[in-house]
Structures are given as C-alpha cells and as structure tokens.
Length: 345
Ligand code: SF4
Image 1 (cartoon, rainbow, N blue to C red):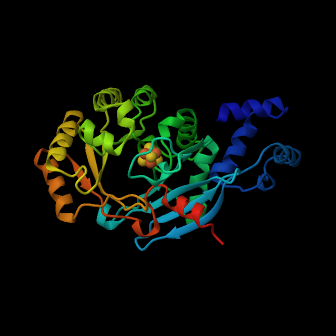
Image 2 (tube, rainbow, N blue to C red):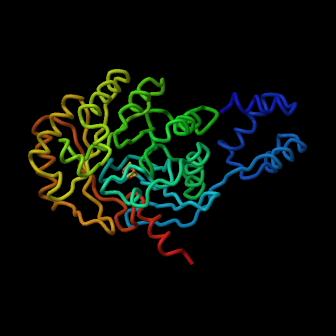
C-alpha cells in the first residue's frame, strides 16, 4: 500500500514521494525491472533490486478458444500452478457496442471447499495467494493481450473469502488511483457462501459486488453439490446476504450451474425464484461444464430454458449464459489438473 511503501522509503533515508514514483512505474508504466525506473536515483534502483523482486509469476501456457476466451496458466515462485481466464465481451451476450473485458482471477492454489462440479477442489487446498500474486495475474494478462481489463471477477481457483486479508489488500491496490485504478463497481467477489466473511465484507466501505454460488435452492439439493452448505445452510447464508444487501444497497447475484436431473427441476426453479425475489437478486444460470472424472451432465437446452422460464414468470431477472471456453477446459481448475497430470514439454 502507498502509506506502507512511503514508510519503507523513509526507513532507508529516501523521501516518501519516491513511493508514488515507484508505484507509477509498476502500475502505470508497467516497468519489468527497477533499472528501467529512470526518474529514480541510480543508487536507489540498485538498493531496490537487491532487496525486492518485481514480478513473481511466469506464464506457462496461454490457450485461446474459438470464441476468443483466453486461458492462462501461471507458475508461482514455489512452482505451484494457478489459472486465470480472460473473457472478452461477446456481442451475443452484451450487444455489439460493448468493450467489456472480464478477467476471472484466482485467490488460492487449489481449494478446500470441494464443490462437486469443480476441478479446483479435487486435489484439495495447497496455499493462499499473496496480494501481489493476485494482482500480478492482471498485469501479466494485460501485458500479453495488450488491452486493459475493465471488469474483474474473483471466481477463479480458490474461495476468495477464505483468503480474506490478502483479498482485501489486493482489492485495495486494484481500486486505488495509484494502483490499477479499477472502480469498485467493476469488481465482483464470488463466494461459495462463507456467511461470516460475507458480513465482514458488508462492513467494508468499498462498493464491490458480491456473487453467491448457490447451485441449489433447498438444503438437501445444495448440500449434495456444495459441502459448505453443511456448515452454512441456506438460512444462515441468506441471512448474511440480507445483511450485505441492506448495508450496500446493491443487487446481489446468484450463480446457479444447471446440472441435469440434479438441480434443474421445476421445484428448484420455484424455490430459487422465491430466494432471489426476497433479496431482489439477479440469477446467472450457467449450463454445467463437463469435468473429467465427474459424472454429471448439462441439461438439454429446452430444459435450461424451461428453468429460466419459471424465474421469468415470477419476475426474477436472469441470464442464461452461452457457453464460453468449454473447448479450452475453462471450467475452474481443469487446465491446471491437465497440466499437472501431463507436464508440458
Ligand atoms: S467452486 Fe470455488 S469454492 Fe467451490 S471448490 Fe471450486 S474453487 Fe473452491
């Protein structure tokens, strides 16, 4: 953070304004070495290069799909792998004029929550990402594609709210005018439903958006898909959502992966409509992406549309997502698993 960095400069006998100069090089000019920071004294650049490193993640693979979704596999300094997905606006989804570029970033290596549709949870949790590792995913992707990301979702590998401290630190830097400068309303945190942290987040001043991975509208169905529902069943989760909604006065989003004959019944649609209407939330319906090693399948299109029809008939705003990235294993954690089991030459 700017204040911390200014204090560090003071410690080494440098004026505090050098901190802002350094951040300008990192976030605006995107310098890849201290040597390139030409308006810093040469002696200071040498000291910085001796004490700190600039950038720690390395691009292992970049895959682009037919619909231009780009998937990045990054290696961290301890050789762990994480995934990041860039989803450019599609006219089919956002209209011709949209220039939306959404980046889906990771917050942990692996995940402890074991949602049953997700490849990230299959090998368990390894470690939390540091704020710098979270932010660097944005820097590396922008460097690679030559464009600015203007919409950010914490929906990649890991449960963001289980890495709460580093997540908030990263968001602070991403949002700061001296950092990446992305508005809070363009940042969405997606959670499997950690009720206590949802309440904590509600008490933060930032107007970041919140998405809840619901995937089941009654406890028996949701628990079958999301083990976290045992710890925070719907009553507790939805109470926390109500608190968030009351504090932030903004629309929540419920993510709902449609899985054939598991959570796509009319009964679930009616229950989901009730939950969403109560919270004035919108619903993103996402047809299930096949995950190797898991037996579930996606419902036929007619069934997906019938499910959405129930929501519509009850006045709930919803989208039925067109599939993106299926051909490049874009479902959470799949590329990492494939690479771990079949190392890249
Ligand atoms: S969906 Fe998210 S919270 Fe659930 S296992 Fe995958 S990474 Fe973890």
